[in-house]
Image (tube, rainbow, N blue to C red; front, side):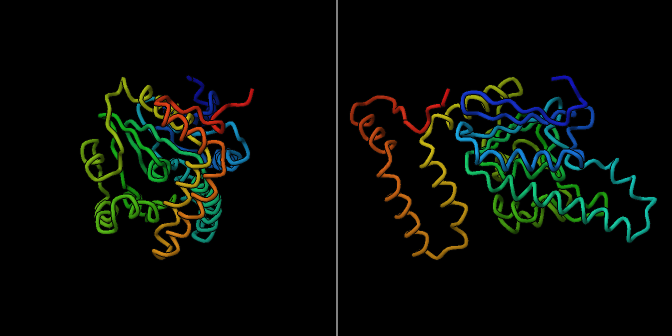
Length: 272
């Protein structure tokens, strides 16, 4: 994967769609031109029954530096009104990408090394499972260029680490290393650099073998839990179970458990 002219590369195999951010010389900063393409990619996942999991990774030394500050510099010669209009357009496009990413119903894995910064934080904060290696550093550095957070960071970070810790990280422009990232929940696991991609791929394969309906229902339940009352959440759980027990996956799972074998869920089979 050495074509740095291609901002990202997509590969799909065995139920796993892998998105590789592919501008290593620019720290995998995301060019504005790629945002609509990524939005379309994320939106398409729900329409493809053979995609069971999304794995996001970055080529080279860094996961993603987020937005391209060199692009920001091009707006400095604009009038204030022109610059504000330019950024309004950028952020409206980014909002659509974040919404599409967060609406993905299949499990999302982020495999992170080096810098995870700016809008690139969204990929990790919005993932279901985050692997980092010893080099990973989560950078909450928006204020260093005179900006508040974007890319859904102000929404997602409090959900991951709690509101008080989120205030601390953002207001101090913090740099969080691997050990601290694991301790406060920014990373699910920390592995060696050599293990990062194999471990992410192994977890992706595990998710791809899981019962599709149960996994999607679980994501929906967890995602909506903070906005529901106890009764509403318990009723949603009831409805999810009632739906699931009528599916072939339930029968296979029960039989496999009783027969002490690995379940082969019908929904997890990949069409040829």
